[in-house]
Image 1 (cartoon, rainbow, N blue to C red):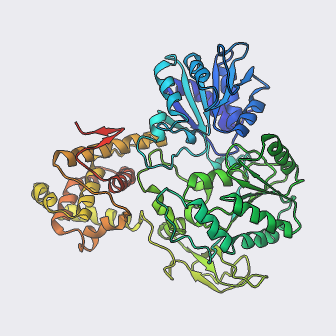
Image 2 (spheres, rainbow, N blue to C red):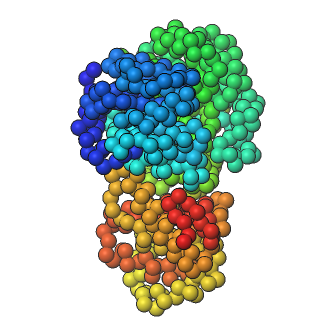
Image 3 (cartoon, helix red, strand yellow):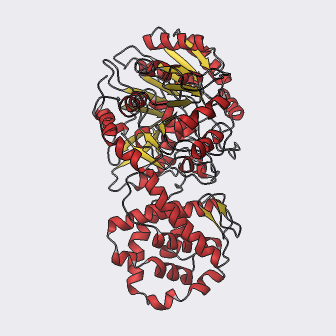
Length: 605
């Protein structure tokens, strides 16, 4: 098989990658061809050596078996395997829970351990912890751990359960925009609707996402499913090819009601869940790929490892606080196929307005406690577009009526001074989401950036630096929580490196180094900071702008701490320092600072 350009690039760079790193993730979008890349790496660099390929689901296991068997001697690990590993085969594939004793023995002998969907790797969880410890302690010195994923992020705020603890580096292999240009993927066309009667505000999201039972009940009570079905019928007529759609639901109750309503529209539909027998599931997937089944409804099984390039419509019926799930599920529709020019994404869950287009998603190797809270705002991404430089557009929520007499509710982008109507229903009845204050202020308020870069150098230039730098004791002594966070932010901005980084791993190494220095500074002075349930960055700009919350002593001392950066650094360096400092202060606010710190990257002596 001829390799794609990004795959050839990785193959060319692979000797340097393994020279520099023992445990690394190769990141590439869904549909880019990561399994093909893994096979080529084995062929070129590990021919006749001992390889283990792990995944977490049976359906992924079947796909890996099919994808690797043509070029390699593959053994699929049994449920209770005995004997010696790597007899008459060179590639052992398995889920991470099969025949653990045999698997642990194989890890000691393997030359390469590959983990598919590596964002599932929990360094502190039962599924992978034992295997990772075995690899670190017992594998050969030259053995490598290679992860594959499109979304290298763990949603948990547990600092002992972050991808940065399992892997040394994330290697960016390709991005969605690049692969669209090459024709490997097709662009997504998003149609996002705000369902007015879907009640999510009162739900307890302390677990990091909407509780499935509460979410399911709210969806059933709302008009969401009816909206989705009616929009689908209208929009599928615009698809040149035969419509082949995947519908993502939170649970079986919603899925069954969705199936019932689709059947009323006289469409061919099937439902698969984690409990669908593997043989039956594979048959349904085959019929869906051929177009015999037009609508395939899924509960938790299609977001990873599923390949149907003919799927050209994604219908999202699961509101979530997980951008991993949003990115993985939408990515399933972006694979290219004959005569397929785009994938229509019908989102009735407000996930598009929350996270934005999947091709623009940013990933974090280190999440803090409560990191999911920003996504509670169902217009989180749209709200941030207010601060796009030279913005000449706004976002509208259509209040007009569709053909069925119901409110249209499309969220659409409109030129500021144009008289553009809703592209869905042609109505002019709409709400400007910014002017009508229908959206919350984003948690990483971009107005801080403007105030910080305008006011900081001006104030620093006119102040007596020596006097204010000697005000440390006064500034910290009676500082309120907002002042402590402001001063910690100034410290972080001064401490953090402005070096350009080539990967998420490099970015987070520098960020965590700065966080350690801030924590050390605070610890040495017995300064504590209580955990904040919610943290709005705009409070940091108060001292520079209004001085109502952060008083002049704290403001000027903070400026004295970090203002010299505007004298000695270029604007580009300070911009990089600013972005890392934002991450530092958000983590410190969400996790707090105590006198008994014990984090994987920092411990009080």
